[in-house]
Length: 171
Image (cartoon, rainbow, N blue to C red; front, side, top):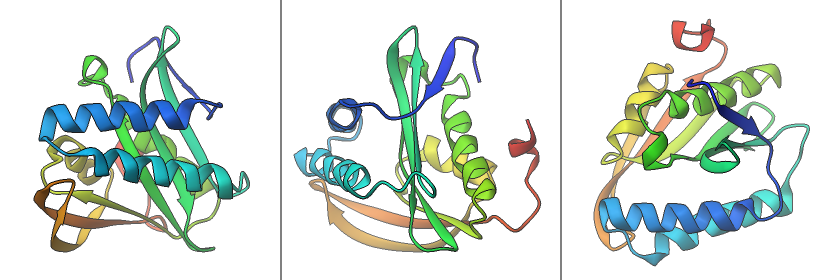
């Protein structure tokens, strides 16, 4: 990850900011409608309302005090956690930040003793999917769906945390 990037915990105001920025970015980049922003806001609200610091975490990436990305780890069960809402601002892309945020999630999940880390994404999110593949996630299911004003292909990915860490996570 590039120098000058700081990963910090969640603060008051971050959920609204993340929902706002993701809503705008995905509308600009993919033409998604306001239902995507609403979904991000709902996920964020549930994260805050149900937050269990012993099992869950969030990372907000900043450069010189400006938020440039985020990722959340949510407990599904004693064995399974879910990576949620990975995103990186356009001006911070290509510097390894998405990989760094994903690595933070994986390391935290391993430390907590989770056996599996899951995530849901859409096949058109090519950059995110390449990060997940590089991190050792495996595509386990795909399903066509209509969401955010578009016909999409949703994907479920799993990472077996009991396997030895890949070279990506050993950086």
